[in-house]
Image (cartoon, rainbow, N blue to C red; front, top):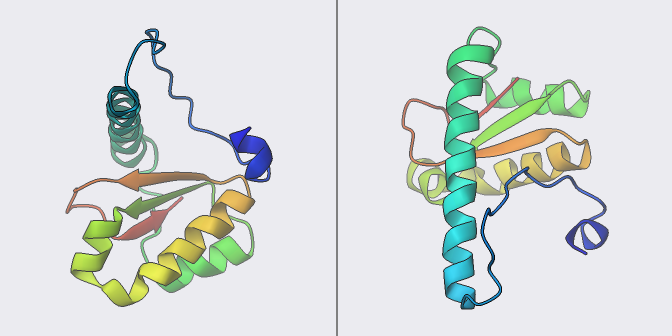
Length: 123
């Protein structure tokens, strides 16, 4: 249903390995959020420190140009709170980058509270 409503955008391969049938919505939300956070931390750390270390683009304009030419495979962005703390004026631009990347089937990962990562970076 989600994919149908969101133009068949791909979903993260996050799974909950227990039944949620008897859980309250808040308990389900906590399980899902914990799994997504764990997935993002693992994939982001692996991608940035091992796989993409020397191939990471961090210049905002360069990333936008690469997105326009559909040459980005993975976009890493800071959390909304972190963007707003550092430079609230670019939040709308980064959000547009995310939409553009998702429309191109580019992987997008939100990097939570990692000050060593720029607000937006890409491979």
